[in-house]
Amino acid sequence: MNSIDGKVAVITGSSMGIGKALAIEMAQRGARVVLNGRDKTRLDETHQMLLDNGYDVTAISGDVSNFNDCEKLIEHTLKSYGKIDYLINNAGLSAEGEIEKMQPDLFKKIIDVNYLGSIFPTKVALPYIKASKGSILFISSLAAIHGLPEYSAYCSSKMALTAVAESLKTELSGTGVHVGIAYLGFIQNDPNKKVYKANGELEVIPIREGVKVQPVKNTAHRLIKMIENRTYKLTFSTIGKLLLFLNRFTPMLLEQFFYYSYKKKKDGKG
Image (cartoon, rainbow, N blue to C red; front, side, top):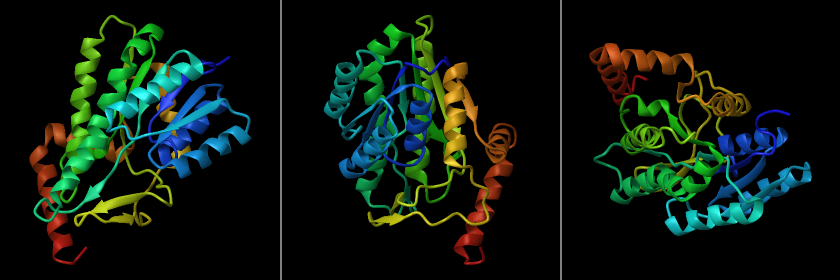
């Protein structure tokens, strides 16, 4: 028996992408998985696919930026399985555009989902995870290391998760609860994944060219290892570790790199 077998895992944003890969990997290892997502049609498709493979899963649609939906998510989990061992705060949105050009409501939308959408499920699930001495994992990004031009809303929302994880880890000291935060790098995107543009419209994220991307299955495996090993912070990819080093020891050099890269892009040369 592995350490995941028989555990109950709630994974937000699990109808596609990394969340879906996590659900599959955990279910394959014997976990009982609670799927969650805003798009009920896509969520139902993922749910049925896992059921067809014989896995013990359930699903409930909802918006993690809505506290009442988060209460329903945890209530559904307890009604289905009677406990919660793992909460993986994976749901997230991205937006691209300069601050001057971004629609004001977009900032709120990104913060609501990426930040409050991790706080709310955590708050509701905490008493039950304390009872099981389980794990709470926050899925962040390399964008949380340093603010990136045209991604201010996304970067700030992911940076905020570091403060949440740090505060929560201290608050839960001595309870036996594991708190972790993962800074993911360039991951193979789901073909249907979209990003908000500055005008508020959704656009399918183009295929990343010239960048080495990690398969979602590999990423899911490493995230599960974080839970098994009760790892606190983990920066994924060599690029991520380099960014972390530069930001800590030579921040001016990193700022200059971003400045010239962005200027080159604006000038139409890159």
